[in-house]
Amino acid sequence: MSTLFDGKVIAITGGASGIGLETSKMLASRGAKVAMSDVQESALTSAVNSIKEAGGEATGTVVNVRDRKAVESWISSTVSKYGKLDGAVNLAGVIGKQIGVANVEDIDDDEWDFILGVNMKGVLNCMRAEIKEMTKAGKGGSIVNAASIAGITGMPKNGAYIASKHAVIGLTKAAASECGMRNIRVNAIAP
Image (cartoon, rainbow, N blue to C red; front, side, top):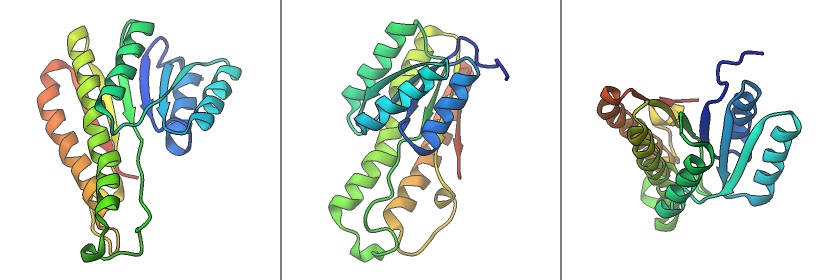
């Protein structure tokens, strides 16, 4: 197995399931110390334990990415524990209850706020904390944000999710243009 990530410290949101869990497992298997976060406490504990049982190093912190102070505290604690932050994978995301149901004119305000709060503001909160720590350390780093195919196209009855993922792509591009000179790469994936 590759040891490309030996000693690297990587923060991962949405780490309790799906792409976040698989990314955490892969990075840990390649030598990274993974600082995982999620809102699902029991699933997060199980995920961390599975990585440790496989010989990897992982920590888990319950974090609602919509809460800027909680995100900042988690990233700060990660840096305090490991002495640095080399990378981050911002995968926490939601699709909402109205996907495939509501036209744009029928989107519920609470649904809109929830989806954009997690998918867009969550990425912003994470990047603010991650970029500050990487800039302070002066050694650069890499940040990967989860957009979606929905971030580069339009689909019916999916307005809030599509808007949030378009925003992730735009925010990622802005951060990439600002952080490149600091040797911090910022990219988005669009599965």
